[in-house]
Figure 1 (cartoon, rainbow, N blue to C red):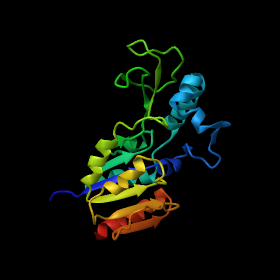
Figure 2 (cartoon, rainbow, N blue to C red):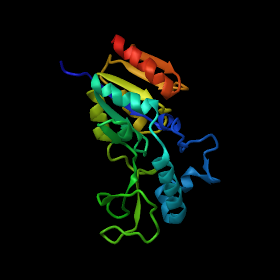
Figure 3 (tube, rainbow, N blue to C red):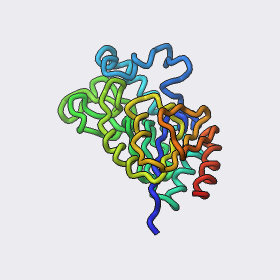
Figure 4 (tube, rainbow, N blue to C red):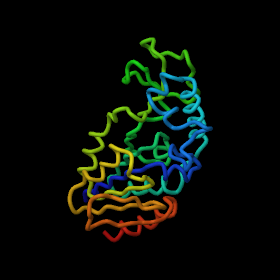
Length: 230
C-alpha cells in the first residue's frame, strides 16, 4: 500500500527543547546585540567579525546539542508515512535523529559559502575566520539565509506542501515569511495539525484543523495518537 505523504513544518520551538536558544528570545538580543546586528547582509558588511562570532558560537552550541523526543518521534513516523520535513532551523538535529527527507529553508550552520557565489558551498564544523577564502578568492560566510535575503528553496518547499496528504506544524509562530505562507499551499480539506506550547494564529478557516497545545517533546505522542485515528 502506498504511504500517505506527511509534511512537517518545524521551527525554533522544536530545537529549543534541545537547549538551543532561538533568534527570537524574549529580549530579542544576543549578548546585547539586536538580531539585525548579527543576522543581515548589512550587518556582515558593517561588522563581519561580530557576525562570524555569532554563528561560530551557535555552531558550537548545535554540535553539542542532542536530538530530543520530538526529533526522534518524527523520524519514527517514516515507518508509516512518506515523511518530508521542511525546517526553518539551521541545525542538523532532524538528520541526527534519523529523518531522511529534510529541507532547510534558511540554510545550514554546518555549511559555509563564498560571499560572491552562493553555489560555492563547503562543510564546516569549526569556526569561520576573517580571511578564510573560498575557491574564488572571496570571504567565506555561513550558508544561512539572513533577514532581508531571498529564500531560494521556498518554491521547492511549496511543491512539497502542495503534495501533502497531512500537514503538521511544530514549534513555529507562523510570523516569518515566506515560510509562514506555506500553510496556505495545502490542498483543500487535508488534516492540519498545529503543535506548540502557544498555538499560532492562522488566517484561513480550516475544517480539519487539530490543535495540540503542548511542548514538542510531549506533544509528539499526542500527534501520533491522532494520526493513528485518521
